[in-house]
Length: 130
Image (cartoon, rainbow, N blue to C red):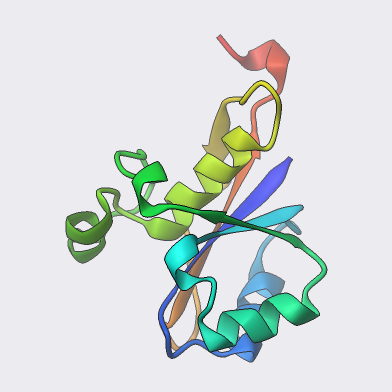
């Protein structure tokens, strides 16, 4: 399963999020966002138009996630180098029962305005898990 993680701030618009999703090399089956961000106006407008399942995660669920990119500011606030990448990893792991291993499909994408980031992660096939 491919899951997207979405990091954003309150200035993001639905159009920016749609543009960012369109840039993704693969279409995710679900999008994870921080629970504290799911009421941001641009996101709620985007989610109402986007047929992808949305999963809200708590900030505590992404602390310590090992990601590909690193922002000191983000690390100081969230305990991980990239909110989008961490959300994608956690969502991918939680998308199966029992939880599977997951890997990022690349570093996060950044919207043209800088108001949002998106990362993709996929579950690792069972035969490659150790």
